[in-house]
Length: 340
Image (cartoon, rainbow, N blue to C red; front, side, top):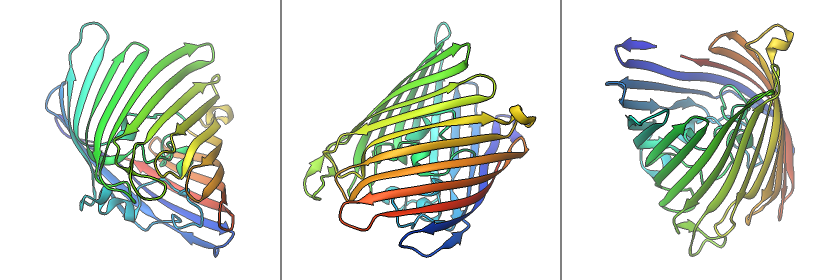
């Protein structure tokens, strides 16, 4: 929404009703509602300012007897005391300069409070918790090595079908540990074939030697590699694959993620703005109490208008634990999202 010359007001608001039927927990329903307004100002074609705020009512089913979040949106507790910085509601605030480069290349430098997942681990079919899959395992690789909402800088380079992304951040806290530095690098390649467009990305991520070790003592360094691929499969189909492997020197819930899914465009049945998503994720346990986790999710997204969606969603989540009773359950959801 353009407010004035160079000034735009955008964002997303959503509400979801999710009901659980889980072993070891009572059946219940919750209805969280996040709101994320954004203000973007472009002084000219090369200088840009951005601010995004986060508000939410409720925490949904994020206290399920399983580790994986049933909705990866930033809910009530997520937007308070962000990363232990004693800062609430301010998610991102940055300045970006776009450099002029000879030929078809483009370079962008962003500095401020940023989100690493805005630059790393993109995926056409498995990346947006407001319009695609809801479970955390099918949004990004669920790892502390992709931090959000803290001080840092990002460099973006695009040249034809090749792209390069670099991110450096200082994170206030990873939960059990203290402050640490994060570094991420992504190389991407876009491929056009008879099937359609495909995007293939390799992400390398690491931290400083400041993460807690499995026993809670000493300092460890986190390291991770992620492969994130998406490919159109003709006019009506698409698919994705994401593989993430993490070093287990630090205390981690998972040392590997394998996920894949398909997308079916509603044009096949006369509704080109609708789509169906089906995916499965397998997470191999790290060096804490989780042995393995699995999630299967399917959704139908009904477009009421171009930016207003109603999504019916079902998830099955299962976790096997080393020294406790295994947990599993179903989550049935209905989500309404509006991008403005």
